[in-house]
Length: 483
Image (tube, rainbow, N blue to C red; front, side, top):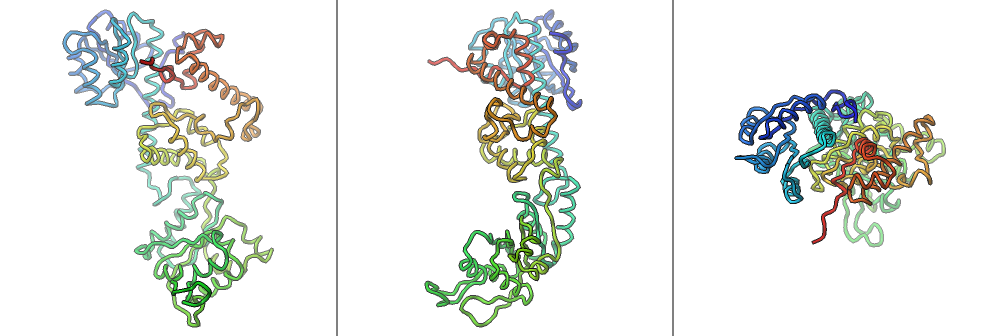
């Protein structure tokens, strides 16, 4: 293993690690300090005892503690417990010249990142430290992104700072505290209802809840009675007066969701409401005045529906006083990482997986996707990944793929690959195959890297190099013996 391979370097220079090394063997302590300082490019301090280490920890909080277990006075396991109680974010790697399976299991159960037995191979130690530091780097990048997400001045309810979504914010801010009718357009899943709720929430009408009507969900006759209400005896089964949704929304806001599916007959009645500010319940001869702000949304081409005679032009122009167009997610890719982080935090809390983070390859893979279902699709992908996640393993790009795209490359090619240069598409397929192959090999050998490498026809170093590349950790494939 070359120095270039073992040197730790956090991408984008976002993390400068610090390491505290603890060992009562002064020769071992000096050797470890020299190696770690040279190979891991870290700030390093040393302590010849557990007591001295604890003193240093009170003033200087390292990212990683590398400590021997068997020491006079404050031993390594006690030091580990103290660290995890007072400084849970500090990673701890344990060493022991008297290693047993029991002591390793105890250390790992008490929160140690890893355990290594003396005498150890220097390259093996450096690999463990590098893996730990890369994990800490990933945690720091996720923390910073979460912090930026919390600090950003996003519009209420929305996540994102792209120029296109900022234009949506601007229009909502200008129109919210007015009574103007607004037509909200955009593809399915872009957040049209969220835009409507923002318009209502920022208005003087927000003391009453907004009423939402899903126009295509009900047959025409039922939808008419739901919108405008009816009098007792208006039709068979009308045993009492019913207050319609327009009356329900009086002094508030009503959202007519997917207005393009509203039947022509109801379009005529809606036009009267917009023009006269009054409704006529079924079975009544007297109109009722209403004070309702009307918002409408659609993912359809209303201009084409007008040409086909399926949508009234006069209604269109009444609704289309001002249009807000919510952009599709593919047109604002810079908003995907903060949206993904928002959904990760939301679902991790909801499903008791708090502490979950994204692996280094996760967010770039999300940015490259087409997102035909827009924000709703992204939300569902993150939700599924959280539900199936292991709390201790970052969510990788592979876990964010849709089930239908998980077939072997020999059987299908992801549609997105067809838009790539041949060499790039080939490289992506090879990487997906390699990650799956290594995972299977480690599963078959229960995390025994040497055995998995041998079965794969590879040497251990080459196999480990690929494991690091794809973020695979042998410990996660190890099973406890049956008792």
